[in-house]
Length: 373
Ligand code: COA
Image 1 (spheres, rainbow, N blue to C red):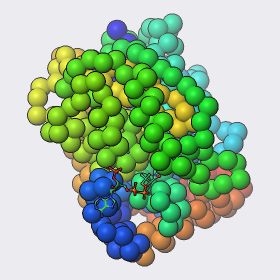
Image 2 (image 1 turned 90 degrees about the vertical axis):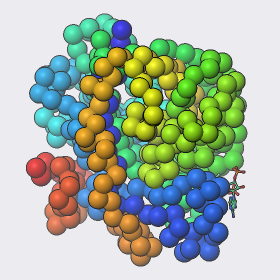
Image 3 (image 1 turned 120 degrees about the horizontal axis):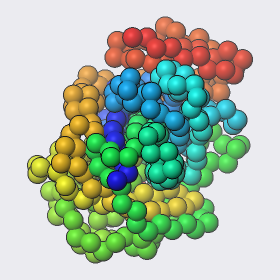
């Protein structure tokens, strides 16, 4: 058996309530909260980026024994911080992982995390005593005052892939790829170019193409916004009832789109909020990445699947979050654009008590990170 040994998550503590955004944009707040299904979006704070978020997620699950067995780090992101150097090299160093390790970054919109997971499974099959750390970390930033603004978010997922996994084994299903123009970020653009309606249609079409027509209690989805789950559920041969559907999208509705981690955030939502005992449960998983790649697979949870998550840390995921005013949000995201493209910047005065890893400065384009506790 090969699968997810441990699963961890991090989401920023600064959030924009969608009612605040609706008021500022002169939109009926029901459109955002009921139509799109989002209540809050996590926004990256001043000294966070994809590397710090990935390390925060990994830090919640890795012990020294795990670290020693890691032979490869795969970093899935569409929020690249460098055209050449892989974010996994920064992360590996910050996490104190062994230096005789492969470190690579992967890209295919929101699908790269799932692609990385399947590559990691093949790697473990040929190196059965080794583990692979798959990191998924993204900042969904569309810019101000456009239709994508309401579907932003930020966060990271860390997955340890191994033989005899503690959380559950992965069962391969069907996959499909098409050359499409629904969402892309050309090298001249700071934000993605998105045709949301086209993307939703493709997502639904490709789900229909790859789903396995099995009835099950839970199917998790990649969620660019929470109510995408309603649209996806309707495509299934055996749709979930409303109570189970709400559990699948609960976390997403207060975090927003975290791109590569979004499907796994939906899985964590089920692990945290399901009313049933989930041992031996098989959960459907639908991955979609614009451009476009789709895959349907399942995860069968173990009898002791709780050993594969850090329940204390997951329960604290949404604790102590700070609601942003519209002015705070504008300042924060203007700062984000400035810092992401700065050749030299000092961020050392932004450290917050809840942070373990920070982006401390950039010097001559090189990011300097620090473990602060
Ligand atoms: N009260 C309640 N619901 C309302 C409403 C109101 N006052 N006004 C509108 N709605 C509903 C609409 O009926 C619609 O629901 P439906 O989709 O079930 O029909 C929903 O709210 C959204 O309205 P819509 O007019 O479609 O919104 P929009 O044109 O602003 O676009 C997205 C919404 C999601 C397409 C847009 O935000 C987007 O493109 N986001 C980016 C998505 C993305 O990242 N995709 C790529 C990765 S997969």
